Amino acid sequence: MATKIFSSFSQVTADVNRRFLKAGINTVNIVAATARNNAIRNVQNSFTLRNTFTTKQIRFTKCGANVKTLNQIKSETGAADKISYMERQEKGGTHRGTNGNLVIPTTKARGGSNAKTVRRSYYYSAIKPLVVHGSTNFKSKKAAHVARAFVAAKTHGFIRMNNSIFKVTSFRKSGDNVSFKSAHILNLKYPSTHTPKKAWLEPASDYAAQMMQDIFNKEMDKLS
Image (cartoon, rainbow, N blue to C red):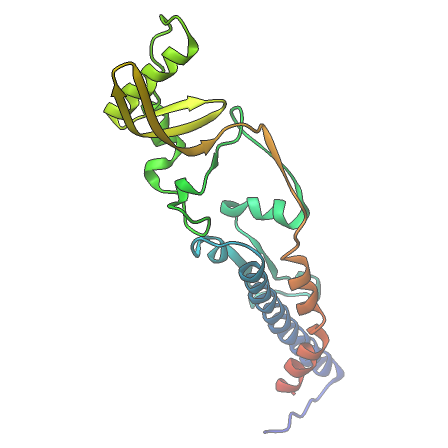
């Protein structure tokens, strides 16, 4: 490595400042990237993930090389707006429905496993037009309910019972005896749910921050 020779103290300070800036930029970028990797690992280990959408939205912003002062050196790790629900996981809090009660899919809506995504045909937006309301001109609620189930069975539709939506899978009538089977698809009982705190970002960032001094020292050594 060539030895630098400075002709003035101002050149020395300028060189030190350049090295500090460069090492500082490299350090915050490495720390932020490490925090992101740690955060993704925490999410993968602590939450039920049905696809890679959530982890792909955990990102970090790099500090550019055009900063002029140490105060401008900054890099951040966090979640994109698309997964704002992860902030509720991080801090804990209440989740409320935007238009009435929450729509909570059942295991049936997920194809029999909570590890799976909700089937598109069971999205509330897809189900809502297919819910059979029927006529109110019946002598009893039971008769009206049976009539709705009959129509739902014929049209591959759904019925609503006690703030829940069911898929009518079969309908049988033998004389005066009527029976039908249904599968619980969506739960609309609750106006809100409470999410307990399960921090995934803060511990990831704290762990990465503990490495900052060592990383900075190594980056300075590279620029010596």
